[in-house]
Image (cartoon, rainbow, N blue to C red; front, side, top):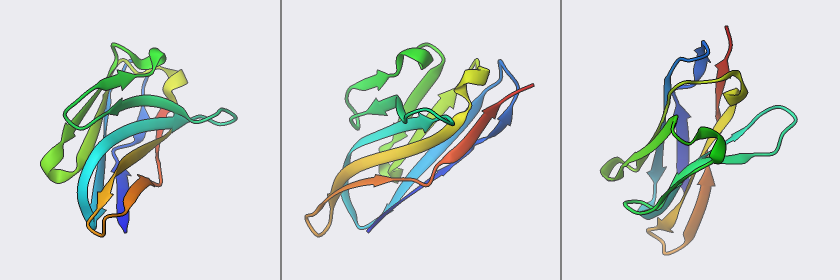
Length: 120
């Protein structure tokens, strides 16, 4: 079993910053993907940022230049630094991770989500 836990959400004023964290734990042999997604009320879940561990990084068009994804591989942790936040960034942010369990099984796990609200 693999558990994924996000933290760091909250209420912030427009133009402000937040840093989200996501840690994966459990019977993990290796992780090859970590990503952040978000879902606003009435909208589909969308990609925010993703990375192949130690490899390619990709951002959603609406966050390019404002958000930065980074990883701490030894801790199976991914971060999302969000700057210049806008009201339209308000959403529940989800962490997703993929890799291999010690059993040899593949996993694709999501966190429970953390609320980010940008409002004055």
